[in-house]
Length: 152
Image 1 (tube, rainbow, N blue to C red):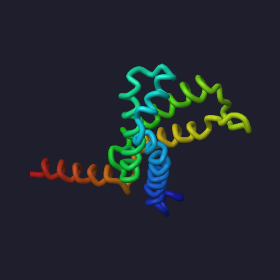
Image 2: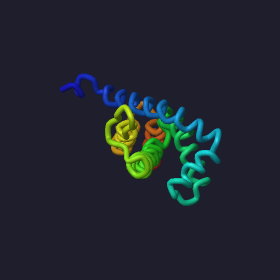
Image 3: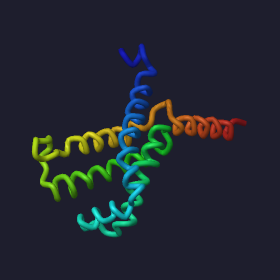
Image 4: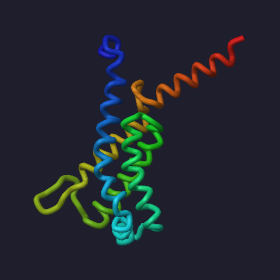
């Protein structure tokens, strides 16, 4: 009933999710982008192969991917990359290296924040960007163009 009265609400919800997630990832990626060698050193401690390559991938994913999420460009692909990154962060850093509990204590930060970022990213993978996105505009243009091609 709510969807029938407010058909725009689903797209608005996806916009809020995309913009919020993008805004969260950008400031986390900027320090990595400014000092990829430092982040690569951290990845080396985690025994991540090709640490400099992955330092650049993560930094660009968080910064450029965050901007792309806000715009709604390649949303599902970017969100999948961020979900994989958060899964690695949880398993390798929070649980593997720090032995952190799920929720933070006074002594140990937990991994509930990374879990929320993982869940939000997966939500965008499954739902898509919504109507207020570059992806949606490109999709409508492709559909319109395809329809014109089949019209006699």
